[in-house]
Image (cartoon, rainbow, N blue to C red; front, side, top):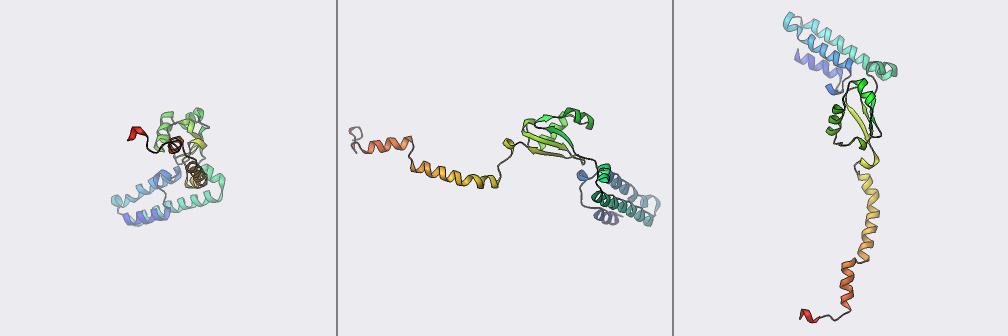
Length: 184
């Protein structure tokens, strides 16, 4: 039964529990309940058929979601905006029965410490938090560094060609007596 369960779940797809929709979660729990039936009733064939029907239903639902947006909205739901331009949308949080503390926890798990750093954050249908940071809070990418590098090189070359205040003092003393009395 374990091998049959693994095979059927492979057919069902590779989503982790955190990525499942409500319908997918219900079907997976149902399959789990069905798989233990042969232990109680000794009817392995009926269990395999029932599990296969549930998996076929799951695959059909996923196919219909891909083909028709209204079915996807009905079965999966839509993302809900919980932060917009650094402002927490408390009305939406209430509708979702989600507290500000829970939102803060999710943001901290992503390394975000301030609401003001978030341009937009959404609570996804699978319960995950999606977000986009403000321009100032985004980390520097390799592409950003590659754009800045030529400018930095030019600035460094200019600094090397024009001596700083410490070197000006040394240059000014070169015209004086090379061996001042106080060093002899």
